[in-house]
Length: 326
View 1: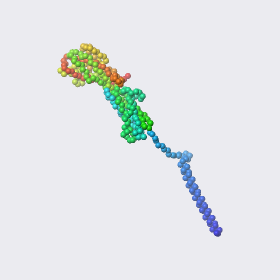
View 2: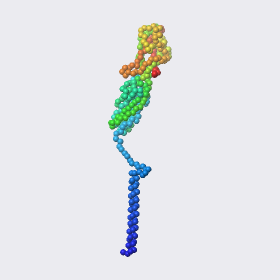
View 3: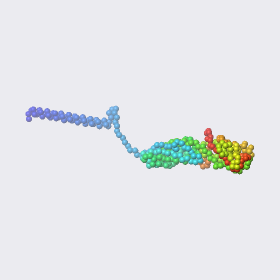
View 4: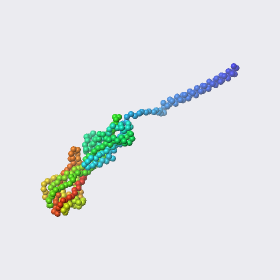
């Protein structure tokens, strides 16, 4: 092999070496850049942020009370009866609504407390409210906590406090308020029968019981009429004539038994009137759950004048007027 051929071969080998060297540098640079990219994905440069994902799976979930509504915020009681008060509770449980085990509630006057014993005036309990799982979706239910609230329950602000428990062992507590309205109502016998009374005589005293069927202390509003209001008569008689309104009288505080003449009758009793007159009566509302202690006696008589006969009939109107507190 000649010299020129050897030189040419060396030159080709040198160029090949350079090419391989350049290729190695390029590969190394690419590898190093990729390494830095990976490194920067896990570690922040000075002043930079690094982000990583996190996850978990929720096990049991506690129930959530979404809302509590107590009869729309206003309770109107019923004279001499109970009113069904519905405390409705919307509940959500992400373990599905069949995980809800029990809903209990207490309805109580705000001046009392959650832990008080039940009393018709101020505290009611429902240990097992009805749970409607058909309401809403599979995670939502509506509980109906019903209370039979008596007519003499205290008027004012009341609280419905609810406790929800589930089969996962959680319980959730919530409450909302409502207003129980004042109730004015009186109860009376069906009629007041003076019996047989001779002309120019005063009847025997008749006792008429007045019962407070509301939830506030009351005075009485009284007036009377024979046929139509304002006619000026106490009674209209079947064989003719009317008994004037002034001849029917009452005493709201004291009994006066025995026979009376007209003069004593007029001095001991108050005239019934044709238009309402409010009289002090001081009849408190019922406080005793066992017996009705909201009853007062009233005392009535009537005088029969000359000129009337037969069967006489009339009307007495009793009204309850709330007595000022304090």
